[in-house]
Amino acid sequence: MPVTLPYQFDTSSIWRTILKGAFGLNAVLVVGLLYSLFARPWTTVVALLVNEAVVLVFTRLFVRFQTGSAGTLSADAVVIEPNRLFGIALPGPRGTYPLDRFSAVRAEFLPGPISPGVQGGPHELVWLAGKPGTPDVLLARTEDGAGRALGREFGALLQLPVEETGAPREIRFG
Image (cartoon, rainbow, N blue to C red; front, side, top):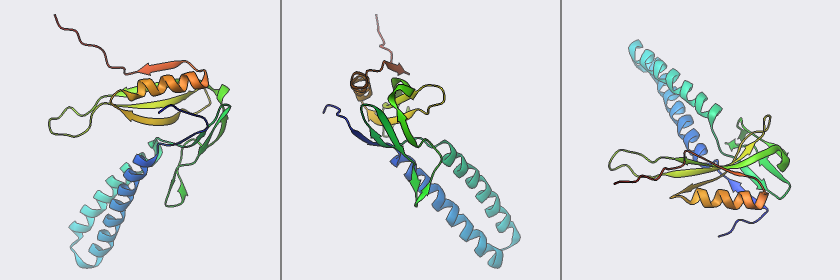
């Protein structure tokens, strides 16, 4: 299906799911910690406190480095809405950026899991690459090589060069 402008995108759902799980785990640990203050020996309290501290550090890292955006791409600008979780705006790009502040469309190829029996495969991220001072904007998540074609479509539509990173190399035998 060809890409048309204005293009609505929302690539933040994966991170919202991860953050909901992280906040849920924090909530369970805090409730367990409060309960253990009154009903358990102090070693249980200390263990839960250490666990909560570790999970809290990871949650803060997840919030700080989450990717994905929601917004609208038009022929002259991209409007980025802040990522929200439980009504709270998360850190990340937001605002309106003219297209002349972007240097390229980038298709980033990522490998799939290497363990047998693990689901998933190679996938791609299609970015609008910002010039210095402008954030990169994640436009789409694809799989099975569709990122190359989608990146080229965006590049042609926006008249921007297309970059490929982490592109799979062809293996030749014989």
